[in-house]
Length: 138
Image (cartoon, rainbow, N blue to C red; front, side, top):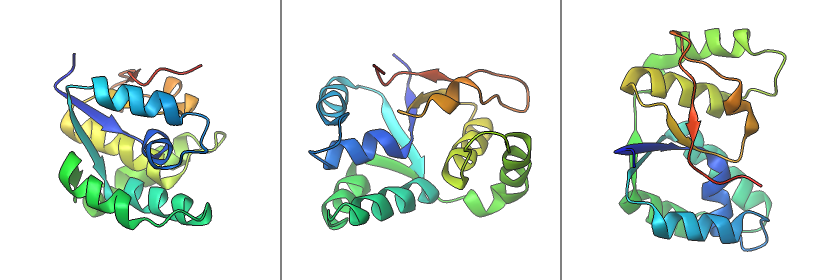
């Protein structure tokens, strides 16, 4: 079991959206997980936006996130690297949140992620490290 897992928006949305087709797996995974969970404000913003778009208030999620997640606040300093990642993966639907997680992974040397996004099978760190997804995909 890794000591830290970087969490992307998909599992977090699924955790709070009972209609999400990943909801049951998100609950099961979160209950079984023993690693520390880390993410950043870009991911939190994406989660809040997508929950709200589905009519789900973000307050419960943010209260949970405040207690359950290590929220990295250094994304601003990662902007040059995020721009480079977005340029390198311009042919994918790479978005700011994904690129910010890649930059966070590089900065923390943590390449274990929880995501429903298959693009993390393609993303590589600047040193060509692969990501290992610990969220079970179907």
